[in-house]
Length: 195
Image (cartoon, rainbow, N blue to C red):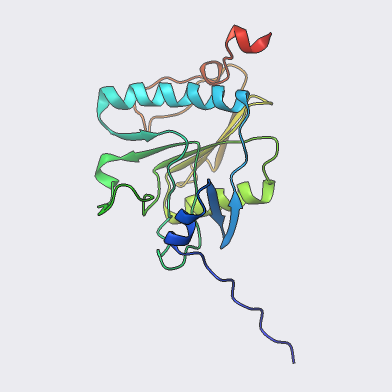
């Protein structure tokens, strides 16, 4: 008779914090976040600046740049999922109570933007995408700087995925009504980076 596979030992929040580096937990497995290159950072900044400026004017919610860890409603005693998106947005009405704001955010973002680096594992990216949407994230954007594509996934599957490339305007009506953001703005690289 075969023995049942051993249950993986889940990291606690305290154990995650003691690691002292940017680690995500993807389906119970801790994974160090890939280092980002200049192109990754430039594209991330383009998105962050556009969303942040709009959010500051409209007071819809809060835009976070790289570094905020989301516990994805995992229990602090055993983290099944814990993600660090490159950019994220939480509507003001969805912000959960946080007894200690120095700790990771206990819930999910309304928008998660993952700027994909060449070294990222495709299976991990897809697992994170499915987990975000299953836990209630409204939209997930997978941004591919090298091919200059943005894949917009929506929880309401309307449609399930939109792929933006070339000179296109993103459909942002559900999250940021009135904001116009184009792929040209997202993938614009400064002159000094093209030398």
